[in-house]
Image 1 (cartoon, rainbow, N blue to C red):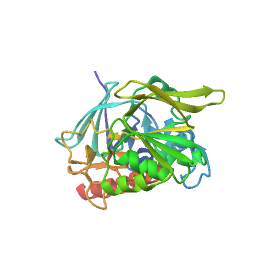
Image 2 (tube, one colour):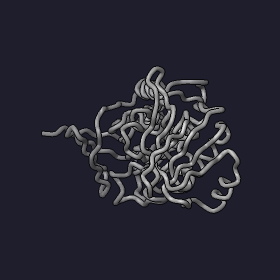
Image 3 (cartoon, helix red, strand yellow):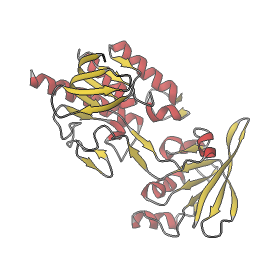
Image 4 (cartoon, one colour):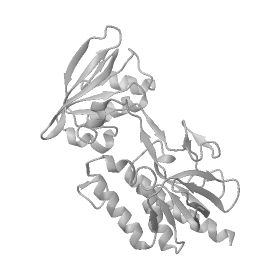
Amino acid sequence: MADTRHTKVLIIGSGPAGYTAGVYAARAMLSPILVQGIEPGGQLTTTTEVENYPGFVEIQGPDLMIKMQEHATEMGCEIIGDIITSLDTSKRPFTATSDSGTVYTADAVILATGARAKWLGLPSEDAYKGFGVSACATCDGFFYRGQEIVVIGGGNTAVEEALFLTNFASKVTLIHRRDELRAEKILIDRLMKNPKIEPLWFHTLDEVVGEDNPKGVSAVRVKHVETGEISEIPCKGVFVAIGHAPANELVKDVLEMHDGGYVTVKPGSTETSIPGIFAAGDLTDHKYRQAITSAGMGCMAALDAERWLAGQE
């Protein structure tokens, strides 16, 4: 028979939002349980140097998440390496079922399942993730000062990333499978006027080329969509900017959503459309998507949950 455990606050997800919620919920004496999910530590575990998190001039992404996990544990948050596969929000206490078979009941739930960058699915792309291949210009653009880089995509994300990267790179090549962009006109206008950006139309990324000692990107091979001709572009960084997908599988049919699947929260709050369910981090934030903003929302979610629970007693 499956184990059933009850907690005042169940935190689902283990990135900066989840761990920070764990710190604050534990300090509020709520004895929270945090279930880490399929990728303990979240997206930061796939990055290398992090230089924009206050308190650390430079820290490896995985190391930062280990420190956050240790902090939450030290405060009294119970952290469990498991995956929540279903969440029943129809009645309270809420019921979550895990991959291991354990059933959790909770008076309040904080969703911190994050978002995942969309990737092209190329083996060479996967091989150089964190070593020249990135999905976050804000996170990693700083490392390519004076270098030539490429951006893959044609929507707002790609154009915004390309424009941002001109602050660092000597040249940005924007690779798009069509000859027109899907981005907002004002962004397209800025891109076309920027002397550092060169669009390459009717091409797709075919392969990331690199070296292994030290590991890093040296070029990309691109394919013309009509002729099939392969050409090579020297570069040190490849930014895949084809969008993000919020990890909303547990609640996509029950909570209000916005902008393609991000959980809607009330302004100035982490409250969702169901009382007692709170959302924090990249699951709800399609705009900033930074570790520090996610951590801030995790704090807000724990405080919101504490106050909501106090009002129920």
